Image (cartoon, rainbow, N blue to C red; front, side):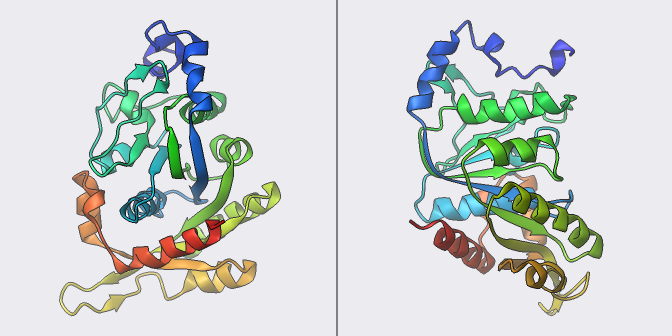
Length: 276
């Protein structure tokens, strides 16, 4: 593997620190609940839902971190306005950047010289990076960690669901028929592994007309509920609109400024599911 493609967070780039020093954090980290956000298909807004779930939990007073496990397509750092902030390494591990509101973030984009540099790794390296983010980051005490998974059912989603103490999965889809077909693969994967599904969020369910404020169902109405929710018995956590203001905030790194009544029902469902 070319040196330029190596993750600078690995032990060989830890400023000469010994592995036993970094491993001190293992006894200090305590994450109460891990929520994985998953989709079978890219482009349905999985990272958006991951970020919004994190933001709303933080607003409600919970200690929250978000791990960008989409190693080859990371977007979390940009959405939260922290690209280019390379984490430091202390005797407790990798120190995650913290947003102004207190959200801890870990993403491979934080270690790249330029945020548009590609990560050209094979499956084992991708899974290894996620394991390192979990074990060697100084998360300390978190009420919730949100893990933004890459699309599909490959090495990284499998590694996360099998090695992290995932409390439940939030599945993200959009109303297109093709997206529904691929999402079913994620549902079947979760069922096969035995990881519980909290529910499904239908993103881009409709658009708001800028002239009359009416709802425009670009892909048809309630397709997710008809094709997935009823068939698998999975609850709907919310129907999110296509919102140009949200897109602009994410591009500007200000997703924490976004607020919507749609966030409330999704977070309520997650909190109720993980209570106890």
